[in-house]
Image (cartoon, rainbow, N blue to C red; front, side):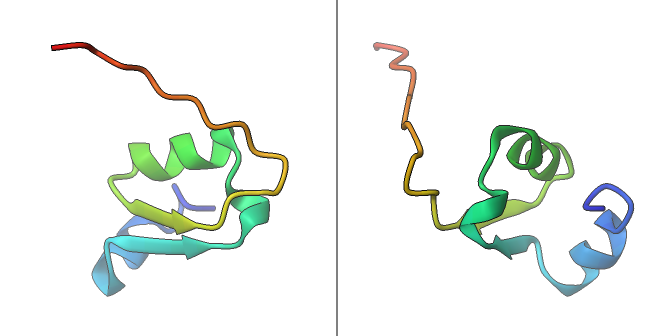
Length: 55
């Protein structure tokens, strides 16, 4: 849905707000690919991981 409506969404805003249900990797990846910024609450069972590139 995000990919289909990408241009319409960008005309309104480059920020997409979504419920915690949508804060899953496949959805987040599609939002990022479309060039939008996602603002979302994380699900209560979310596992946060990050990579330290070390400089």
